[in-house]
Image (tube, rainbow, N blue to C red; front, side, top):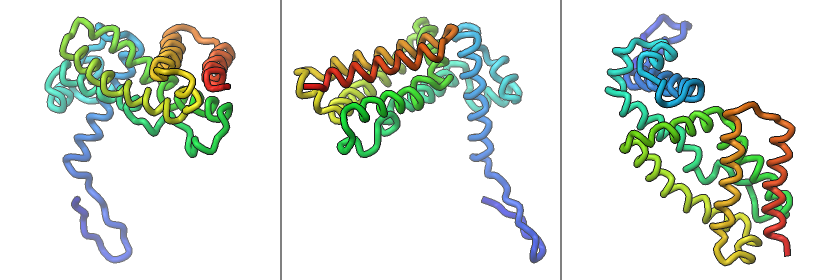
Amino acid sequence: MKTRSTPAGRKTVRHRTQAERSQTTQRKIVESALRLLQKVGFAQTNLQDIARGAKVTLGALQHQFGSRQVLMERVVDEVMAPLADVGTAWPEDAANLALDRRAHEFVRLAWESVYAPPSYVAAWSLFFGCKTTPALFKRIDEHQARIDPLFFAHFAAVFPEVARRYPQPEQFAAVIFAALRGLAVMRLFKVDEQANKLQLEVVAQMIIQAGSA
């Protein structure tokens, strides 16, 4: 990290390192790709439009990522990252919360941090489109194979009442996550926010009923 010496009383000017500048450029490119994936889909998302949206040259984009394949692999990693973070969607101090409060807090956190953000809708455009690109599809499949067991196991730990009633609680957890994913995918279309709120309440009630004696 370099700074420029200045007379006493004046602030020093901090110059960003090359690594920091590169990281900023990459972030702008990835965000531009996510916006395009959400807007026009995987097939229509090309490097020229991504560069234009990021306000960088095509040459700068290719310098950072080399090819569309490499960039899309980075985008896959980005959109899957919130799902891999076990701490993101779970209520704090869950053991001290009643089942009703725990279920509602879990649904709220999971929705707000993982499923509702625009990046998740963009992710589905990527998921649907990349089936014709085996390397990308494999990367997504590998992420999912790693993430799902973590989420299912954590769900059983946060909701032991459900685990006690279901011999295979991960199957119940799979249904809950499928419901949340389905509601998220519906955001590709016109969404009635009030209806969405009621549907999330149904998901919370499913958990409460499953864990009730």
